[in-house]
Length: 227
Figure (cartoon, rainbow, N blue to C red):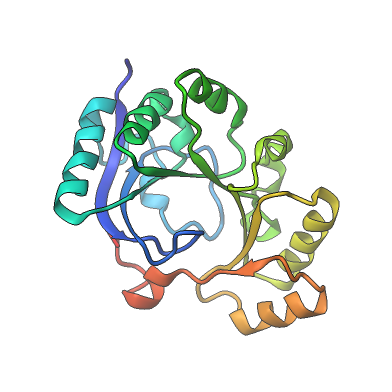
C-alpha cells in the first residue's frame, strides 16, 4: 500500500465547518493541483514540501494516541489536496474503525467519485467539505462539476469569497444547482468585510446559507501554523 505524504499533524479546534469549535486531529498532506490566488497553505502545495511518508496504519496509530491523550472525536484530512493521496480510502477506513468522525477538505477540482467508490468497497463514507473556487481564486475553470452529484445532505459546500463578484457568482450557483448539502459562505481573511456578506445574504434571501468565519484566524495570529 502506498504511503501518504504528511506535511504536519496537530490537535486544535475545527476553525470552520459543521464541527467548528470542536477538538480535532488535523492531518495535512502535501501536494495540490490548484494555485488559488488567496491560498493560505501554499507552503504545503508542492510535492517536495517538507513531509514524512507514513503508512495508513501509522497515521491511524497517531489518531489512537490523540483519542487517548485528548479525547478527540474528529479527524480533519486536509492539504494541499488530500484526494491526491492514493491510500486515503484505507486511512479513512482505519480512522472510522476507531469511531472517529472523518472530514475531508477537498478543493473541488479532484473527482470525488473514484475515492467514494473505493471507500464504499471498504464499508465507509467520510464526510466531504468541498470547495467551489469562485472568480477571485483564478481557478474556477478547474472545477469538477460532476462532484455535485455526489454531495449528500451531511456534506458541506464551501464558497470562499473575496469580492462582490464572488458573492454574486455564489448566489448564482446556489440558485442553479440547489445543493442538498449545507452551504457556507466563507470570507477570505482581510479581503472582504463579513458584514457585507451578511447584508448580501439578506439581499438575496439566502436563508439556508451560513456565513462562517475562520475561528483559528480570530483566536490566533492569522499566519500561525499548527492551529
